[in-house]
Length: 291
Image 1 (cartoon, helix red, strand yellow):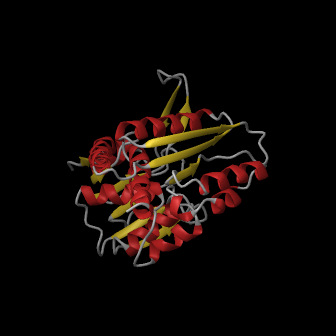
Image 2 (cartoon, rainbow, N blue to C red; image 1 turned 90 degrees about the horizontal axis):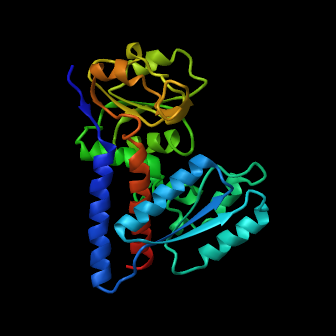
């Protein structure tokens, strides 16, 4: 079967061009330019890379940005005070705290401290709950990116059976809600406690995998003509890779791709869409706060 590769890099670039035009229009009209604040705690290498990419993306679309770095020894109370300061800064429209955080800091406390109308990661309970309302607010960035890929590739979701493997708060859980509410799909959620995973995945018209377990989905677990969206990204180390490591997805791409109608690669599929969604959310936050 000939499959179509879903190119997240291209779609992300298209979205950034659209945002750049809107920022230029706002500037010409003398309206507020979107401003994203980023807090990074510690010196985790992967987090540093993600943050660098976010800063680069802000520059590319004409956003203002503020980068705040703190040592991993910062106390939870001090970090919460810094978050309060950003919450009260009227010039900042969107705001993220890069995860993971050091073990002594509660992710839940930090997330809920962020003002929901500035929560461009879409993690607060207020935004999360709005997914199933008629007025969704700021959507979780990765699932938002997945839905945008499906939309821009004109992949029909209404009435289709979507199987989501992975039930995390960041990806699987909100994605299943968005597929139900906005996509009008029939959704099955699988997770690490699911027995005989293949019996569920083989029934999927659209299979979406967000576990972080390289090669979890093999060819015998996918039905002919399915749409496969691989959200998992894991850094796998080994001497066989030119850099000493490679990013791998949850799907055995080479074996699975020939059976599909559409499939995302890893890297270059869902990954670039997460940052594009973050930018879309920041623009939306600005529009809501400064019409």
